[in-house]
Length: 150
Image 1 (cartoon, rainbow, N blue to C red):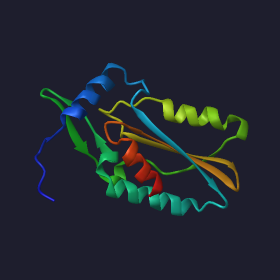
Image 2: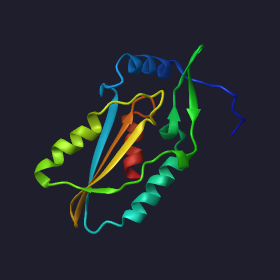
Image 3: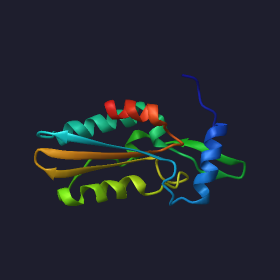
Image 4: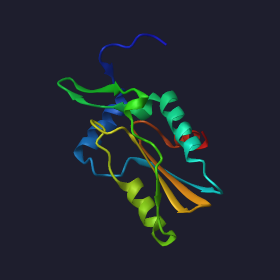
């Protein structure tokens, strides 16, 4: 690793995604979702540790893209600044699809929001769904598969 400049520039691809995001921060067009069903007893503390480990290892998940007079820059936050704790929310099985859709279709404002969102949905004691969505400015389909596996 090398020292970072005071202002971390964005790539050309990030600049394009940033521009489109700022046109409509409510759009889900560049959201990359994944929903994982977990069957059996869930150790929420272990899941929380795993999520924090991901945040520690993947700076892209904790990077904001604030606007400056010269255009967007990358602002990498400490992992502890991201509130991604998987707190179980009980959801009726009949409402599960709707709630997952709400999570993954909500937009991001990448100038102020971390580009990742997670919800832990408890259907019953033996079934949970982890709904995760990452904005394309921080991930792509291949990287989200790796994150889901982790």
